[in-house]
Length: 235
Image (cartoon, rainbow, N blue to C red; front, side):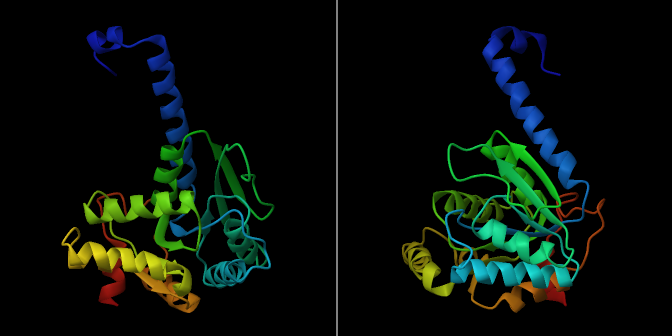
């Protein structure tokens, strides 16, 4: 509870806004506590299902489900739909953490679980806490926003380190060049450039998830701040 003197300084609009934020976040946390951490797939909502990146996402979702890993995504079309489809088709669990947008965002038909957020920050917290491995396929502003937040929080040790894969070496080449420019100017440390790995090999991602294994629902890596990446290094 907020102290009374602080409450008195807030407007009705402030209180309503804070309540709406809290409601959104609690809904997300309640949902991710209903399944063990899985593999979260990010990427563009605008790519058609016959695009090479969507085909890769479909194959990844299929392989992850074969190995018993929940597939988590933003729940929309494009890359998210492809990953969900691949897992759903063989009976895997597919969780969609959707959001209300002005265009292009609607739940895809391959979700076993789906909730819809109003606020990006609550959705991003939930997408992160639902994950033991992060996979970023090519995407636009939304995907880059999610990627930079994950990298920044891991860099600053504000979240446990998880394996982070950027799928599509041709697409991510310029991103890697930008990181190298930061390194040259000592704007980031050498270890910061090792938080993520660029790959075209989906089996590498499946192997990383398998090395981490299947944490129980009540053993989320955020509880006690255990680093999933250390498990992959020690196996």
